[in-house]
Length: 337
Image 1 (tube, rainbow, N blue to C red):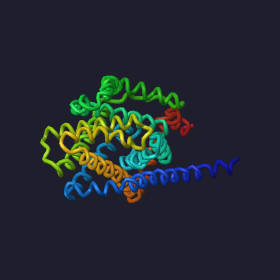
Image 2: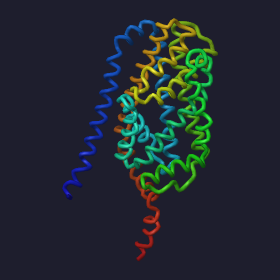
Image 3: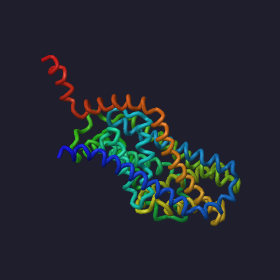
């Protein structure tokens, strides 16, 4: 029995790394499988537009990561940003496995590996997704002309906006987070989530979608000369496309569903073949950026591992104090006795 307990952590570590290899394999396979169509589409885009557009995707990913970390640190002791980024960026590669629930599974397992409780990571992932939906619908309203003309079946999505706004109220957010924690037999939050935490998370999320809108606008600008009004429309379309892709969780990373929204918006400026080509390039950029960002996060964690180890020790102490305050309160008494 003792030998089994000693071996179990090693087995779980191996399984975690095996899971990472599998999901990275899915992401790479997805990119390679689409390469023929992507290569043909690339001939339409100037390299300057391609580079700038890709940088904007990375900026958007960075903003989205900061939104996720803001929620994580609003629910308990502060986790180092680099560590939180690694959990999110590596974990979200699970969305390329059919049935995007794997993304949440990976985030929980990676978080647990670094001492972050699985329920806390799950609550963070769910609330970050909810914040993303609210932010995308706020900006998605800018794409209503496209929705009304070609995708009237999506109008119902905007019914989620008032519900989402209510759920983002700190009191409601605290209650729901505590409820999920109780389901996992964990103590509820000892403090109320603040307006500052919600504001940071929503602000970073909005910036992420604006960066994604600029990314698409730069690609389109390589073929035609869109104006500022087009930027607003494309930002709304990208934002709405992410929400639709999130709901269509059976498709790897919402493939095909998000593209339908983008093609509908770009068809106002481009021919349908051109719009399809740009949507393929955009999808390939997001896949490549996901892989690159996950790799960069792991690299920085490796370079600054000693600093992160010290911060992790401090975090674990705070986590123990947060989870078991009675032990901390009893410690001075026991020492005195």
